[in-house]
Amino acid sequence: MVDTVKLRSRPSAEKRRPSMFWLLAALILPLWSAMVRYRFTPQSKLPKSGPFILAPNHYSEIDPIAMGAAVWHLGRLPRFMAKASLFKVPVLGWMLRGSGQIPVEREGATRASVRSGNPIGAAAELIEREAGVIVYPEGTLTRDPDLWPMRGKSGAVRLALVSGIPLIPVAHWGTQELMPRYGKKIHPFPRKTIRVSVGEPLDLSRFADRTVDQKVVGEATKQLMDAITALLEELRGEQAPPERWDPSKHQQSETGRF
Image (cartoon, rainbow, N blue to C red; front, side, top):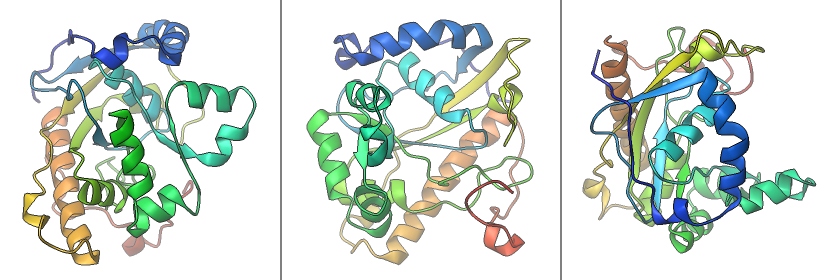
């Protein structure tokens, strides 16, 4: 198992700037810190400025909170792509807008644009804001029985290939102790340790002169999932199965509970 440390990161300019995140952090982080401690690998870091796409593994429904808090600890503001309809909900919409979350149409900007090959709108917004965004490349909780990353989908990779925004693999381990996959209850005691390893931005230069078609996206997605799996192997001190889990080969739906 790779060594991890308690990280002390200097906050970025965007984190020091007053925003809705300050309120959310004041409300959520004290309770979260009572339940969770973080340990980062020594090389774990995020860009101090500019846009980035963070691609983590996903095996618990509480992962977004865990990853959002990890990004905050690493000195940047955590943002996700959220359904545009949520921005119309009273109070929730105000919080989403105030915290810089990125609205996407369910059949438009992200599901259709990021997954189907036209992620220009989402990319332009990230570049304009110089913001980072967390995109789960598996699209849902892994179906792998031992919680290894399963087959990836194309969203994060398409966004990176079209925009040139750095695509950063990350793995974490420990949230399953706080909330098991598809669990309905949080188990806060004793305090849980979440280990995080942030990799180097993926080198996608070999795709620079190629058309972003299904073959290119497939190759780049495999490269991304390989990188995430390698980081997780180090955190767990174990070796992943030689073949990545494919729900379609096991008569499983790729969305919803199973």
